[in-house]
Image 1: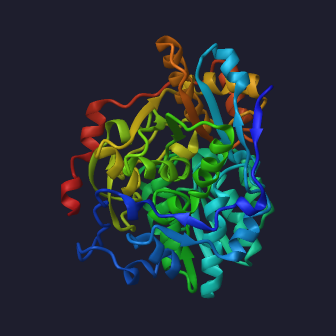
Image 2: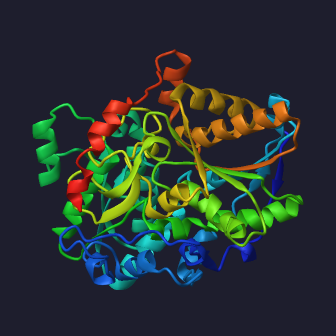
Length: 453
C-alpha cells in the first residue's frame, strides 16, 4: 500500500465524449431492424430509447460529442478519478513491469457505471420522459441508474438477474434506498418472463432475459423508455471519460501504456479505458496492446461466432452484428454477474474480428486469486468483475518478468467488492469452482442464427 496517485483537477474533467466509430478504419456493420431487415434509423430506436441517445447510437461521423453542463456538474461529485501506480502489486509480483490502474470504484455507487447512467437519465428527463426501465446483472448498473433516476426525478424499474438478486442482496438494497423498484428476473410481470419460467421453472436468469423484460415493460408503459448499462455504442461513448482522464494522468506519470486492459461483459468497462488510447493506434503513432478479459464461462470474444443476433433472450431488441454465444445462452452462475452476457457490442466485435484488440478468458478461481493478491498489496477489495482485469494484468506482468522487459500496464478498476463479500467467503471456504463451456454447447446454441436474417 505504498502506491502513488496521479490526480487531476475539476477543470480536467473531459468536456466531450470520444466517439471511436468516427476514427475506425472500418466501421461496424449497422444494426438491423428485425422486422424489415433494414439498417436502423433514429425513428426505429426512439420508441425504446430517448431520441438524443438514439442519435448518439447511430453517429458515425462526429469524433467528439459535447457533454452537457448538467452532466459535467454531476460528474464533479467524484470525477476526475485517481490513476494509481500499483507499486505494492509490482513488489508482490517481483516484476519489472509498471502497473497502473484507473480507480473508478470511488464513485458514489462504487463503480464506473454512473458515467453513463447520469447522461442517460438526463436525456430522458430533457425529453419529458417520466419512467425508465433497465436490467442489471451484479447490481452495479442498477445502483448507478437508481441514483441517476432519483436525481432527475424519474421513476425506475430494475429487472435484476435472479441469481444475483439472491447472491447480492445489498446491491438490491442500494437500489431500493435510491427509490427504484427491483424485480428478480425472470419474473411473472412480463410475457417474456412468464414464458421463460414456464419453459424452465428453475432458471436463475441472465442479462439477456432481464433485458427482454425491461424492454417489454418500457414499450408497453406510457411515457417510458429503456436505458442500458453496456453493449450499445452510446454507452461506450459515455464511458470514454475514463480513458480521456487516464491519458492526461499517464502523461503526468511520464509513461505511456504498452498494454491496456479492461474486464469484459458487454463492453462498457473495456471501451471506457481503451477507446481513447486506441485512436493513437489508428493513426500509427502507437502500438498499444488492448486486452479484454472475460470469464471462461462466458467466452464470446475468445470462442463466440460473429453474426447478427439479438441483444436479449426474447428477441425484442434490434439485431446487432456481434461476437456471440447465441441469445439463448445460459451462462454459469459465477459471482461476476456483470460479465454473464452472451454477446459483445458491435464496436468491440469489429475491433476484435479486425485484429485490433485481443481477448483472454479467465477462470473464476484465477480471478479471485488475483483479487486477493491485489487487495493485500493495494488495500482495495475489487469487485469480481474487476478481478478479471487484475488477473489479466498479473498475467502480463509475469510475462514481463519472464522476458526481462519493463512493460507499462494500465487496467481499469471498475468497481469495489465491498458488497460482494459473500463471494469472497465462498472462495476462502473452497466452495467456488471453475466453469468451462464445451465446443458442442456453443455450436448447438449458435446453430439457428442464420434464421434471424
